[in-house]
Image (tube, rainbow, N blue to C red; front, side):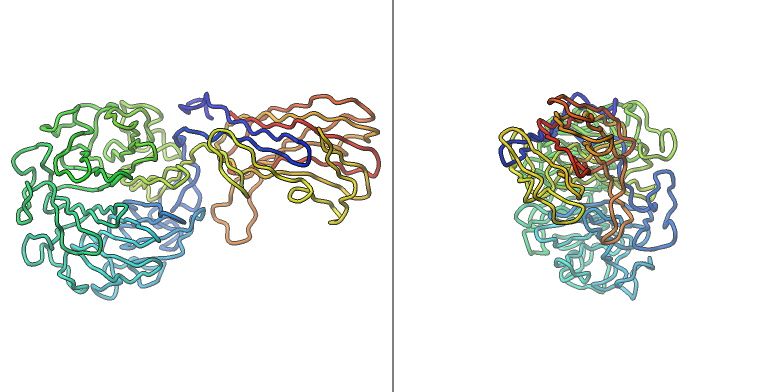
Length: 547
């Protein structure tokens, strides 16, 4: 896509081949990573150049020091809005929250423990995890507890760390044990519903079987549930500092822990309390130094997420960047927030923009591979689109495939709403005859991309007695969504790119147009129109490429 995009060599081909009674689309789905320029911003009223806390006042659109965000399994995003003592839920595609946790249903308050400590209150929460059917876990750090909310409810029905009480917030209630917590931060749930909690104040990670509030496994304390020693026994593959953040479980049950105080991320094979891979310390399990900024270094890493192929994203907060590591590697190959440089760690490098970061704290991915970053000190969450092709009404194809679409059934329109008699499909083309109504054949394709993408649109056309320009044309219409839109609000048209057919009578000849889009986009419409009462036009072999 953009010149700096690491996968710019990829070419995505959409073949719109008009055949006997159908049009086939053969998309090639991108295997690339999200671009390093953000496409959507949450918390700043659509602006990439402001970083105002609670921009416009506390509302369903504002954020103040967001810490960690998660994308739910099915339909939206959850953000811990730390300074507002709340968690916000955003439906997919919207930058306006529709559900709030911790403020008794109000989007205009940010009160700590509003109404008193209860199953509805929060006090500066940090971690959030979403399990099957959108059940939610929240690490309520300053109440020394983790809360569980059934899907759709903002009232917790289970509490960890307080002996079953929703009205206490005691640090290590009853003493350090398998039931106590001290400043819990990160939470993660595996495929079977088992819960992992980063218990920061006790320098440990606890494992709870599904549904239980008593831990049965501990990492960082040599197997003991009654100690909370930072780097117990010295810095090693078995120790943890008392400054932990995110925990992440991949699809195979392997665990990642952000050991912030030791400037490293640890990887534990499923079921093990001994790390076998370390990020940020040059392969050493016995050091915790910050020695220069590079593709191998970390400075207080926090947010973690693993993609579908095992690649790891780490929010390297003090270096104001997010790093991407290919599966199994501890050397990053992509950097967000530093203009492509692995040797700088400048906050808002180049100024506040869609390319900059300032102490990022969380990372998340949705099912399409789009990346979300909690840009904490800029009081925003940024979304980065992954390159992909899909057909809006049908399926997404990886590699090659054909989606049969029938023009008359799905894609034909007429200005009078009824004139279909002058359109017919032959063995090798589509014919549109003149009539009193303007007729068009169109195909909508969901295709996310960024400013600077270059398209080539081409087709063959033959005409018989075609009037002046404007009567016959092929077009590509490019749209971006309206992030502030309510229901029914139309998409924003980025550009219309038109090829006018020749006039008079002519044999089949090729037509082509190359253009560059000026903005992010998520949808293109390919359209062929004939609008005169006389003459006949034939279209064939249409294609659209983007690089």
